[in-house]
Image (tube, rainbow, N blue to C red; front, side, top):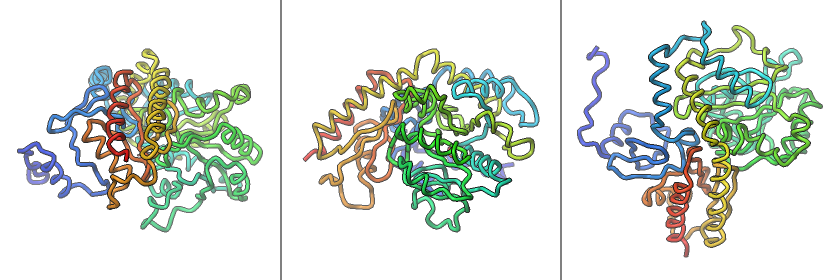
Length: 430
Ligand SMILES: Cc1ncc(COP(=O)(O)O)c(C=O)c1O
């Protein structure tokens, strides 16, 4: 065995540079990583290999719903792994059935397909749309400019950002982008081949931009009128992040007519917080279309394993028991309010703050004199300073800093985060 898989070189000196060297030599360099090597976490804090502590306001890009090293997740993992880790989808097992029931209850009448990532979940919806339109020869899916739907070939074709497509042509056929939050543009873009429209409830990678309630309601009417599927990507903005399970539920709260009409999309994808760090994805499909993908038409070896489902069930249980949807709503509103206060105090540094619940985007001013005009974007330069001050956050494009912390972020941790951000902003203010 040793001949086939040589032991990795021992990390003798557990320093950032040593680990970076391992990456430089052995890991495909698809990520421009920050100069931080993390070692452990607890709740909303993480420590790097040098023992420096950070408040994690990025949550592993909206993944760590219950923070780091959550003891209840550990217990669920240990207990389930003593019983059955993996079974394949050739057989039935209780955790997958129970999780599907719980998720459908949170969305609406329909069924769930389980997979392993957000991109894979979206691939499932693309296939659903093609199946739906197949008999009439319709296959096209309209998606939004600035959207993000994953890094697979169809995912990049669906994504409304040129940078993810560059160098990977020709694109998978059947995707076209339309301006976001523009109903008229959607109507005008329809062709006889259109089968579905796919949007994020809150664009994440596109800069934390929520869909307008009228836009979602209008898309629903348009899709009903033209016999199209209305699909939503809830990978980043779902799972209670906005204060409700799915972002459309939160966005449409102030529209009683939406509730009265029972607004639902026809399909919605999930991943990220669903497994809280255990890689998982899923899509929900509304009742009338729930059996369109029949036996043999779609699948994945690992999807919905007993282990993954036990973790996801535990996360749902804790979120409900500890009222974490309310926490996301209240702590998020407070955090956003504080950042808006900073924007008013330091307009030369923060241009705008937007978002819902614990999905907040802080847009930096166009020109911050302290930033060098080098190859690093303003959002990356800002986050480098946040690291130095003791917090992690996630860049979105060149100008936006995203706050996507654990749903159980405490009030005092939110205050710590605002304090760290203010210390950075104050130093950047001319
Ligand atoms: C809205 C959205 N969809 C899809 C994806 C892709 O998910 P994954 O990276 O799990 O494939 C992401 C990832 O950031 C996302 O934000």
